[in-house]
Image 1 (cartoon, rainbow, N blue to C red):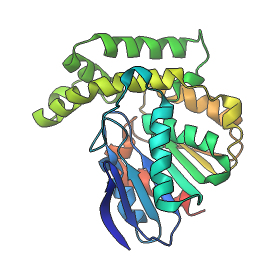
Image 2 (cartoon, rainbow, N blue to C red):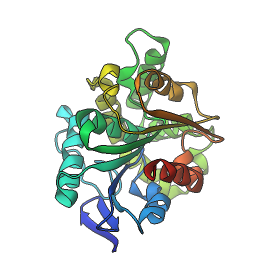
Image 3 (cartoon, one colour):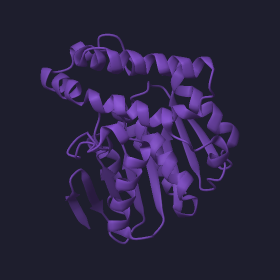
Image 4 (cartoon, one colour):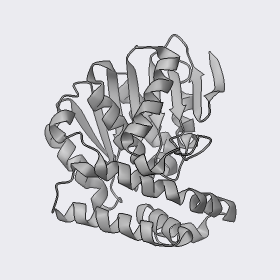
Length: 263
């Protein structure tokens, strides 16, 4: 058994070195800490690789923002995975922006995926040009990009949570979110510019769990609607919560994911 150790900056490995690996990716303006409950529950039987995405937690910042795409995240994530388990297969868990990244990993490595569990992946590039859903995403991204850092952090967090959420946070947490808002803008750029298609997603044959909240914004479910039509081995699960259920309902979400991993 491994205690939670810092393998590299922002990459945490824990658990059973003889077990299958579970890779965990968090949402924007969050960190690997959001998966701590799931990490702990899995550590006896699985090897968890819990990753801070670039610009969040203890991960390094993006070195060349002008050239940022999801491939930037992908390269670092895959290097981390291979440094720990080589070319062995693995499970994937992702939430929101992390979900979009796990989907990209699964599309590019379908033969290595044991299971894929996603809570409201924001793979917004899968929304067709000219649709109302895509227009809403672009408008949201524009507001975040053109507002002051504090207003952008407030708008972003209140869109995915509820009105007044940001102002009720501790000052230290607010300051961290304001600090990291530039990376949120890069996240949107990476999401919209991504190239894998729904047809590519149809090639994922491993068990796929698509979770969503009953209280989430409509835009959160648009990507899921499209994935449900094309992914062959998919299970849908609705939770009585919002977009941030992996944090607000960590125990419930963890238990649902574990059931998929253990199938």
